[in-house]
Length: 383
Image (tube, rainbow, N blue to C red; front, top):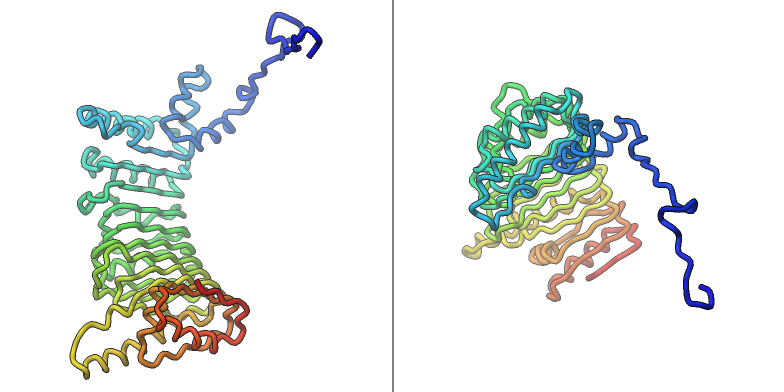
């Protein structure tokens, strides 16, 4: 700034000092531009067609599709809801028709009101993605109080050779009645609020995934499987959430996973949790309150229940005995405190133990046995 108080500013135009503006995006090849568009929500990728003749159908080469009816429908404007649902439905069909016939990497669909779209349309969209060789499928029906969604998922979904990631969020009714079920490439499976035809449906599903590595299960109410059996030779990461309602069920959770390294379990509803063959376990976070299964009865019945209860607790911890890092919630510690004669199994590999308390004195009782049987323990964290 000079003495007159005037500062020097760059001249934007009309002089030799002007800064040249270079359109670098237009110099990029079509393949790279379509790859960039694949990371946008599909609605906005399609909007680029108005930019120029070159861009008119450039979006048709994208490999990721991301549809969300929330970008079309404003649910506070009831009088416009049906019309905008129709616009959304037509938009999805138009995109699928104009999309170039190449491999599809990802298909994501989020709908808040499935009734307005209809099962048939959504079934068609998912079938088209499967026919295009989709690798990642993410479907969310974002209406908690929606009815059970039957016939929404095409049967071909469970015989898709290309599918590597499958995420379902909604009250889908899984029907695996086809003679053969196979998902040979599936490595990641997330199931939220899903319902099952029966217990065999659950077993059949996991048997059909020979290379499954990452599994997330969220169970919210009676889902058709009293015994929920997870048996997988390839599974590495497992997260289970079954704690939405407080009432106790007669559900039994069985897990048999010899390759499992990471377990995150929150289950306050199952009557029994059985963990077997966890020889590769590295880290486990456990929140279970089996103590509430004791029930009422006369003295002899209570004695019998306590014997069974002690056995169930011992087997639960024995299933975790190979872990190097173990975290036990306050619910779990309280459950252990109700054991008549709690004896911890040996934890030969345990390096770090983290336990949480509700500030009840009896919850400290099982800790001494846990520590005494963890001969290589280096770190104890109490909260």
